[in-house]
Image (cartoon, rainbow, N blue to C red):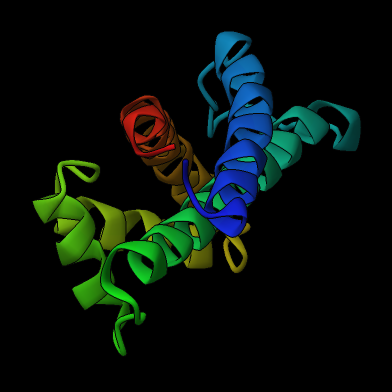
Length: 140
């Protein structure tokens, strides 16, 4: 039986993941040549928020799981991801570092050309996060 904090972190990740899956199921590629109204942008804003929320929930789970497995958290984020990769939960530390960078880029990008690139990458990263969520079930 996992630690209650790890279990709760997993359940939070699952809840966020369900919302992200819903957004992905309705995703239509962002078109940089289109002038989106604020109403039309709400879907992309929601997708971005759900991505960020799910990513953060995954990081919190990793921290809880690492604490449970090793007794202490890593000092550096990359070290934590390397441990999760070694455990078979994360497929690529570098891909997760890029997912984190993407989260930061989204917060500061407003140019259509940049948004188009961001949303293409977001879909790929979101699927990676959801794949890890499926793998995480064996840890709880």
